[in-house]
Image (cartoon, rainbow, N blue to C red; front, side, top):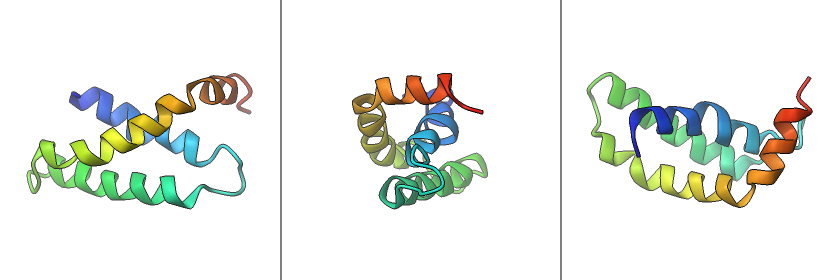
Amino acid sequence: MNYQAVEQLLTQDARLLARRDSPAIDQEIEEQRQAALQLFFQWQDGLAQFQDLVPFCVVLQHKVDLNRDLLRWERRHED
């Protein structure tokens, strides 16, 4: 997993998945995304190692992969 893939996952894919039932938010996915984002920002600031992000990203990526068709539909029908 590289920097660009992690950024895409955290700022777009997992975000969209957490908010798919807007205005309700999937709290479990959002909490995992927020925790990973904090580590991502720490990594950008040189305060964390990139490999610290991997466990969070693997779980989120698995959830995104399981819902890939739903995310495609959401993107096509975004306002």
